Image (cartoon, rainbow, N blue to C red; front, side, top):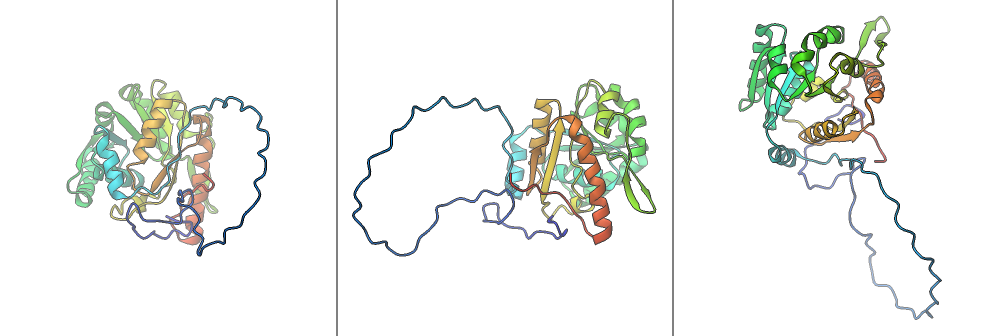
Length: 296
């Protein structure tokens, strides 16, 4: 979505677009022939010996954000099918992400504290994605069976849930989408945690897990409109290199969304706090805002 919260028109994957961060190819065209003029050649300037190129540290190449639905599905098909569990996946964000990843061919498990709520969520997803490989049940079962786990519970249930499920999660990739936030008469406000962020709290409570902080800035209600492409950047923080790459590849399954490496897990506090600002913007402007980083 753009800064005004409007849905972008769907275009073919190879269509040219004026988007921030999109690569613009081609040479500058000049109309008309130019007169040929004889110019006395100049002597070439003396060239100093070239120094060896400096070693460049490996970094993730930013996605362009121009991946359409077909390309996103091809990228998903090129990877082994993932078993993705959403702990507390009955809320808008968990449902929306589950729908998108089920649609791209992954096996999805919706976890809840009660089997009844999980079954209701599965039915809702199957209504939107009839061909989806979707299951549901208690949170612990999902954490045990999945190889990638999302934690999407309300912030006040974050600590208790992870304390209970740390052994079931083990050393799996744990993607924390939770934002410590409360509401008062002035609107949303960030809640300070002793660890610094929800993701850092998750790493303390589940020390063997490969915790990655991501997916905070995609609007849950828009995610559930699976026939409409999302737009924006997903900022990804984490201390585990391979796990971070896996999550960034997972982002690539969402058409028209770009993944950006936002540094170590310590930076997750800024992602979470910025989400509070987006919620406030949505309230003021009656919008569904997201994030797009320019200049990359």
